[in-house]
Length: 619
Image 1: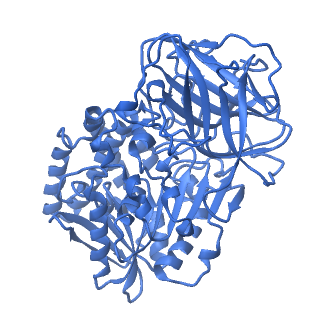
Image 2: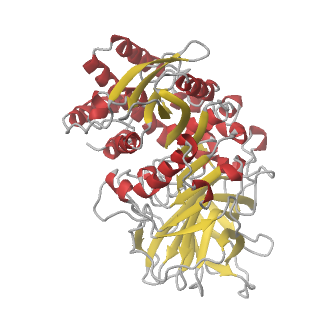
């Protein structure tokens, strides 16, 4: 059974209910063919960190005499067991294929389990204050080992991407470069409560998946007759279900931003990173979203190389990206004079596709961009496009609305919008819910007279009233193609009681919630208030003849994220008169030549197509 099917299974059920399924999954994985060994020697042991905790490691050495430059993979899944029984049968959260590539290029691979995970000692504390310190201690320990040249880098994505940001912020002397992908750095606004809307669904499934990775560690330890590891895994299982450690329980205990949340916001130290960074992200990331706390803005732009693309959470596996990754590591970890530093600092992949019929992770490895926009450095300059919400469910492009003013548009809450990409096996639109016509409003432009390439976050500045004191907004951005097909572009969310902004961090296209208890504001029933909804970073080419649309409805499953609702059923209204000028604000890239033909409908990774549910109507 593939890793992606495992993830879908675990994201769909509670921990206890899933455990028997996880065991079955592991047995199925163990029956698969053993992967080819790409390492010459494997070493295992424990790295002592400054407070006496010992972190389990597994080291894979490449061919050659050594010593070797070392790439660290550090997370709480199963990196401390790479090369073991489960890993050999591809029952791992790690990328065996990426490891094979790095080994072939002469790197030693060191997998390290975070404290309190797998068979590492200590107490698990997701992104806690010791996390980056532990990573820095590992880097310095590695540099002193006889198999190490003293040049250390870090790679991989998701939790292993977060580890790199946290570790590099500690500035260990022997860390030469990091290549984080798909990272949370402000976990509350990136994942746990996007726009202030709680999303417990993903965390619950992730907690189950984490346990499955410790089962894989246990299977490897059983095969190796490693009593110490087996004993510690059992301790970590038991500790993980205590209230002080269990992450789903902690998030219930900390529903608003507080000191506990702040101490796990690794974004706060990202400006300390002083080594070259290769950042990779997917705009439609179904696991962590593409927000990433905007940590890239806090890195010295001369040290940042940035690859962005449409696609899924595991697109870090792309062989197109891998060639960039290896060149980056060769330049800054090995010290080869390969000219990487002269490359454009920003690559924005457009219309990335995978071969039809391929399954993940093979599809991620084979995914390739159809075309690329480059920029010499980050941040990327954009101009603003403001689209007004107008009478008749129209989005106005420039000029003045000459139509007579009308009443606000009403819809019933909470009727969830359709799920998008919510089954972890591929891109798709979910079914429209009963009552969707009364439970949503849309605004659509006329056919565009020219190509429009958007980039970055977008802001839906909406004047909203409700019959109750709070409500949640989901805004979905789509393209309506001339053939009547609707393409998913991006989404964003806002709890209206969380609408007050951090003015220092907000821009025209990026509303940044204040996200402090003192900033919470109830709605006055029937009185419109301005709520700015952040649509997560994206780049997309709307070709001339297409139309731009937004849907407004109640939050719904998007990738692994599912959301609570703010209130009982109510009636919401979207206002768009002169006193309440609701608008969509987009960042636009100028001087871009767009290929005249778009990729086939539904072929762009994680951007599903469907027939326009509204047909020729404007609703």
